[in-house]
Image (tube, rainbow, N blue to C red; front, side):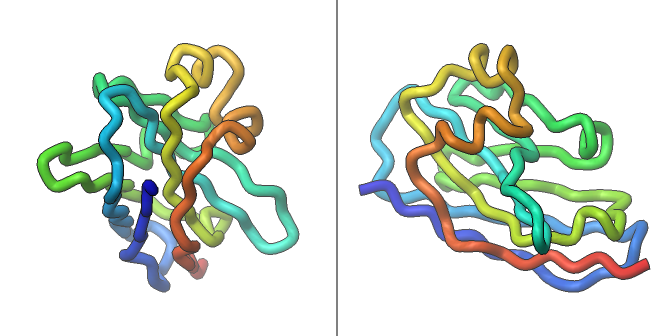
Length: 132
């Protein structure tokens, strides 16, 4: 059973940075996609960024050039480095994993909406609050 445990949230002022971490266990698949999603108050869950086993990445337009997704395969850890944070980045963030979806499909159909329903395994939410 794949288990994801996220950490690293908090409250920061706009313009500052935060790094989210997600440890992945019980995962023995050679092919996978890991992703970060978020859900703001009263909003639908949306995709933020994803990375596959080859290191190929994709980002939502709203975070491109500000957020960086990365992984440490030896530590089975997923990261999301968030820079130049804005109040609209305030949300509960989730890490997720999937072993069926291909990154090329996510890139073609979009990380923002379509990918949300494709990921099979989810971590608990991490609250990120950005004040003006």
